[in-house]
Image (cartoon, rainbow, N blue to C red; front, side, top):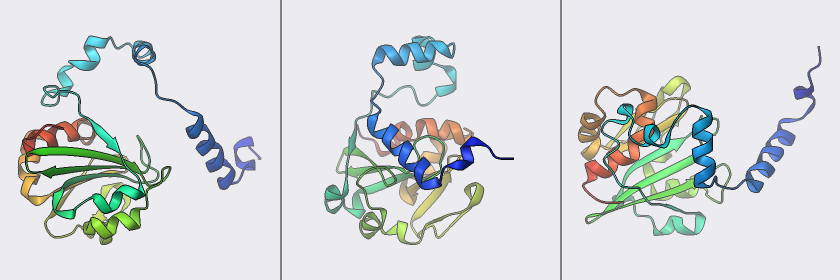
Length: 197
């Protein structure tokens, strides 16, 4: 039996998705509130829920978007954590969040190696643990570089932590599920690093 969805090539579907992404825009605050309301959330519930214990005491975190031209400015010694989404991950596929600390300042950078101008191989020249890291099936990975710890955050999302902060990070997240860690890893990393983002 022939279904309409299998008449297109993968390349055609990817191109259509890329076009939709290029035409998309961020939601306004009002649209976010309305979207939350559709799922039965009120603004109070989304910001102060009990499920976010340990993650709700932080101010808004600032994240800077970067591209290929910014890669040479990154220093391996400053990188404390890297969140990496596989190309088919739930959430933002291909997302890369780089958490750096220099002196007492924490900076978070965002890139997307699938949909943006960001070359993962070029980044691996700076962040050398990516040279050996290999994502497996269901969170099973190999090639975690010495001095780094891997935490699987579910659905194709990975977190690499410098071993000097991994113990404190794990203590903060305690028994949280993979999805809960995914929801608060930035806040926890900033807290563990003792800085402000």
